[in-house]
Length: 105
Image 1 (cartoon, rainbow, N blue to C red):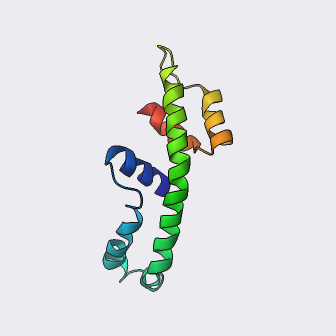
Image 2: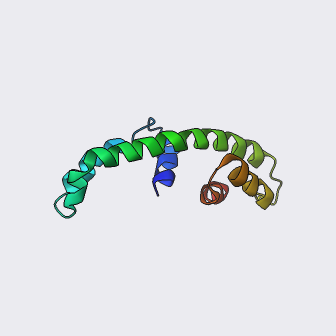
């Protein structure tokens, strides 16, 4: 979920890197009464999300570049080859679900 949201935010909303972790205080404000543990661990949660965003950003940037390159070579049948999706996942760490989502888009 985090990776999909990070990709959507960066690609479609032009949100800056780290935008998702900045939502934690609002989440704590809204949901903290129901889930007191998120109040207690807010800094830890923010750090984990920030680290994951930064890490995934590197994977996303490389994967998007390669995906776009591969997508240009898709023929008239508009089918993204499974072998290319496999390459993105096994070689570049680009999640299959994101490849599938982007191919649908």
